[in-house]
Every structure is written in structure tokens, then in C-alpha cells.
Image (cartoon, rainbow, N blue to C red; front, side):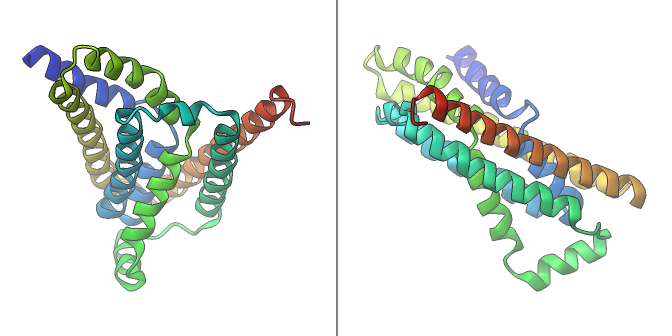
Length: 217
């Protein structure tokens, strides 16, 4: 049982660890505003993961395999990531004090970060593909044993693994930010913005290709 639980946590870490839109946004927010906005991005992403996990747990994952649903999510992801990346690229880099001041005066920075993370994770085809394929296979194997508690335990450990990665990344970015020079901070933030734009364009192209393959054009 301990091996199974540890393996599920590692599975969660493996989901969250690869460089992708949600990790880039955590880094971007952490460099621009500090720890809490970065962590809120991760929490927003975990909320989408929880919803996808619940969908799979209830056996409704087949909906996510429909072509029109995938196209809609890809187009939405294209808009969200392109906007986020372009905003990051054009926005001036702020100092740590200015970033904390902006968080206080906006009052909604944490919620904006949370919503951004939820949108990015919820419209990321790579993330959805995992939940439909890999996690779906793991879950179906557990459910075949007619042990719902066992399946819920595996899901919880996967979720804990994702949370551990997001928290560690937010801490790392926060402390790295304090030792970065202004020039390096500027280039990292702009680089992160370009990466988000790249992912947005990639999802847009994939949506167009899926439209063509579906015979809608």
C-alpha cells in the first residue's frame, strides 16, 4: 500500500513537472509579483485538475474526446495563452516592492492569478489528454477491482503530488527573484511571455488541423 501511495504521488509530480503553460505562468507571476500570486496560479490549475479528475471519476471522460469539445478548448486555450504571453511581454518589469504594492492596491491580483491558472490548465489540450488517457487507464484499473475507496485514495495522492510541485516551484521562483538583476528579470519575464504566446499559437494551429480532419471545412 505504501508503494502504491508513493507511486501515485510521483505520478502527480510527473504530471506537474514538465515545462508547459501552467509552469511558465507560475514562473512569470512569481517573478512579477512574488510568492502568493505564483501559488494562486498553481491552485487555480489544481482546481481545473480536480474538476477533470471528478469528470473522469464519474465516467464522463468520453465528452472530452468529442471533436467539437476539443476544438472549443483549444481555441479558448489559444486566446488565453496568447493574451497572457503578450501582456507579459509588453508589461514593464517591476521591482519586488512595486510588485507587492501592486498586489495590495489591485485587491484582485490573487483572484486574477487563480482564475488565470484555472483557465490555462482547463483549456490545455496536453493536460486534458493526460486525464483522458493515462489517468483514465489508472482509474479504470482500480475501479475494476470494485474498490471505490482505493480509487479515491489513488486520486488524492496524485493531487497531492501536483500540489507539492506547484508549491515548491512557487517557493523557488520567489527566492530566485530576490537575487536576480533587473536586466535578467526583464529578459526572463519577456521570455516567459514569448513561450506562452508560442503555446497559444500551437493550440490554435492544432485546433485548425482538427477542424480540417473533422471535415468541417
